[in-house]
Image: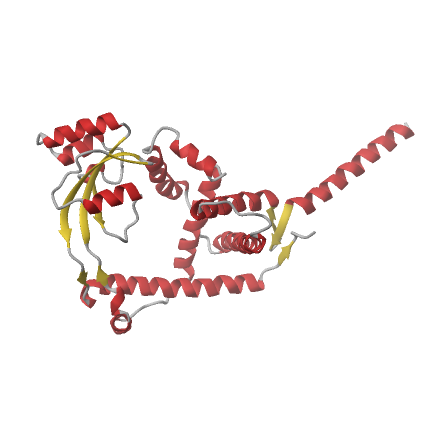
Length: 317
């Protein structure tokens, strides 16, 4: 009996020791008594680092890029602390995000990805080393940020005079670069693209064929319109180079292949560059100035929350 009790006691001590060890290893921080786990941190780190390396076009070397990696790690740690504070403050301010609000962001994104080909959305998640659940969490925190900002930062107003002063001091910023209006039909196969081009040359309607065949959800029901294209717009190189080489009304004679599929590209009106008057931009300028001021005020608000929060850094423990 004594031996059995000793065994049970030993097992209990081992379990307790294991639990204590797990608490130390698995938490990177405590924020006002709430934990941030190593798993949470690692998921966010992988997401940010993978995205950074994809934009950079190469992976970081742990030795050669040590200072940069350390800087990124510190930024990620600070960011995840702020995310916890945002969630806590949102709870205090009774600000919440519904599943439907997250879906309004996620579903169009999924549709756009899937339009690139079967499995493209899942491939994206795998390439970013994330899951849909984690992606939903990041969308949720982004919406929470915006809703909390609107709740706590209310007394911001930019006058016409302030907007006019900014416009006068920064006139060079207020130019419409112009460009050429571009329409496209995106399909998965070159054979289908060539067939559509042949039908267009025979006089069939571009908008009707875009609505019927295009896999681009952003333009298929809008006549294939992707907007103005100029040297500064962000399109894949193959698409952009072809679009800028076309003359108004010209149809590219052959499909253009990109990572998204095969494009049938048609040029519309050539819109010249022009200076925008204050009246042209006043409404948008005031909104942007107000948003900039709100963001600055909210950053100060969150910094104050951080300064007064009970934050324990457990990374070195």
